[in-house]
Length: 341
Image (cartoon, helix red, strand yellow):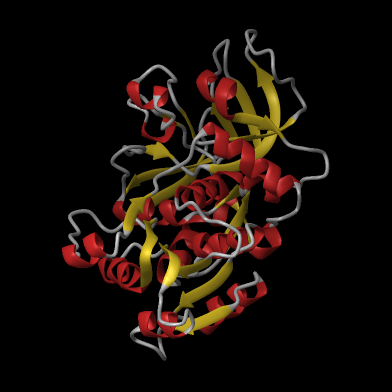
């Protein structure tokens, strides 16, 4: 059984053939697949420009057991517990040679986590699949892919111990930023809309909370809490042009903005060039992850700094995936659901 996406909000869980593997591939029995905001967007739109052309299986955050290995696979054996990333770079192109494997010209994506079995292509087996430590649960291991994206985003901003980091948006990704920023020793200001989101951010260690329902201009409050300077780092984890502007307007002189949230296609923003220039504001955007960050994320999970109990609040069988997607689409900001095939 697997979930097959046929188009916009058209999803069926149906019998499919167990994937055939080649000499360099793995066949993995999926134990846990986690929902993701990207998957919800794919469900709504019916496609993903870079990753999915329907009809196609989908889902990409998973952990499971190796049930078959190609005869050229040396690193893994049948019965081992593994977590596989959803991509692997070529390591040969210009961007890979520059250490920007996330921008690889031939980045190989893999989908199909919402299924009983998934084929892990040889390149991902070789470069971006890892054995799960014995003390780490499948649920925790499945968090590695989104955590790697957050980890890379935080590192790209150059966060240092003692920095004030302001995070706009408190869905699962924003909450990961809150928790990870605290692991790095930062002071965290969390900005969200719902009380439940703010309560979760507080539980993750956020030092200050701002409700956008009660404060339509959170940048003013951020400056009040930073002696008028502004925040050292602002991370936008919503994907909205308005909140992109908020991020720029609340950062201090010499500070850094990370536009982590991807806005809808064809979105435009107009930024104050004088502010950017004379305040020496650095604007960055972070997309995806690299094998290095997947490995680091697994270490963070293994150390217990990030656990599934903080980000996953439901379990559902694979047969309920359509209902789950509809629920997540109409309840923005909810935590992840663990799909158990």
